Length: 91
Picture 1 (cartoon, rainbow, N blue to C red):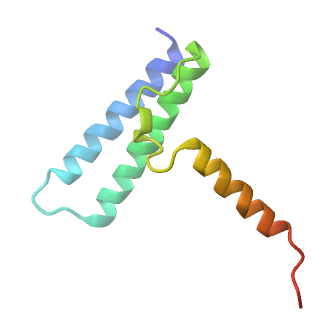
Picture 2 (picture 1 turned 120 degrees about the vertical axis):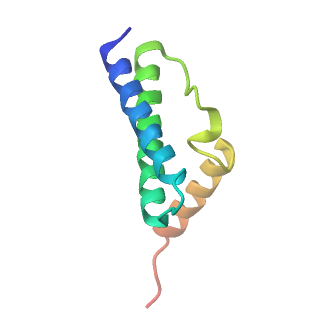
């Protein structure tokens, strides 16, 4: 196994365990839960990036890391935003 993939997997496992401990407790702190969720998200992104760099395979998490709009819609919205930003502003 690749050392980078193994390291990323360990970080993801650690982040998941921490998240589970926080949200599984009797009194859940919203701030701690959100911070732990962000750590899980970043660890999953890192793991997916290491897998893709090593194998060329896409993310094993599918849309879980980027839920929402499909790629073509995002590209269209980005192009529209960029076009609006380039327009000269009237004073």
